[in-house]
Image (cartoon, helix red, strand yellow):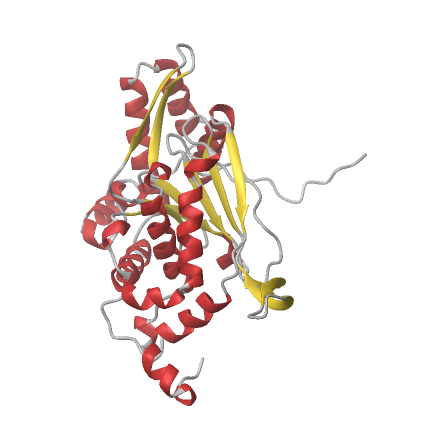
Length: 325
C-alpha cells in the first residue's frame, strides 16, 4: 500500500516541551476526571450586563470571568492549588498547598502558536485587574520570540535536572536540543542582542511562562459552537489538578416549578472537566470547589462585586428597556 506523505515536520521547541511534559504526566500521574455540567443561563445573562457602558478596551471577556469564578472555587478547595513531591520507590510523598493562586493558562500567540503563560496572584485580583493583566501578557507576547523565550525556560529546567542528579536525562535533553533535524534554532549575534535590548517589561520572560500552581484551559474559546465535552486532560507535574472549560451549549434541563412540578426548559450548560492526581486528592476534596461554583452560578449577581467599577445591573432591573445585549 502506497501511503503518500502530505507533510513532514520535525518538532519545534514548543512541541518538544508539550511532548515532554505530557509524557511525564501520563507516565507518573494517576488521573481521575470529573465532568461538571452546571446550568449557567442566569450567570451568562448577568455577564452581558457587566459590560454595559464599557468601551471595547474595557470589556471583560467570558474567559476572564470564568477564571475569576474558578479562582473563587479554588479558594474554597485550596488543596487543588498544590504541588506533589512523591518518591515511588520509598512510597513517600508530601503535598504543598500554596496561598497564591498562579494559573497556568494556554494562550494563542500572534504567530498562531500556543504558549502557556503564568497568570500570577489571581487570588488577589478583581475582574478589571485580571483583564489588564491578560491584556498586558498578550501585548508583550507580540514582541516576544517564542523559541528564545522557551529555550531559556528549557535551559533552566535542564540545569535543575542536573542539580537533581539526573545527569543522563539532562545530557539526552541537550543532545536532542542541539542535534538533528529537531535542533532548536535560537537568535544569535545582532538579532539576539536586539531582542535582549527589549525591556523585560515589554516582552515575555521566565516568570511569565514558568509553571503555575494549577492549569486552566479554555477549550471552548477555540470554537464557541462546539458540541463536545472534554473528558480527559493531562495534569502537568508537580501540579495536582487541571481544569478544562468547554463552550456554553443549549441543552434541555429539568427545573422544579413553584408548584413542585418538574418542567423541561432550554438551558445554557457549561461543561467543565476537572482532572486531579489521585495520589494527592480524593473526590471529596473537589466537592467544595463545585459547590462554590454552584453558589456563584445560582446567584450570579455576585459578579458585580468582582469589579471596582460601578455596573448597571440595578438600573437595568428597574428599566429593562435601557439594556441591550
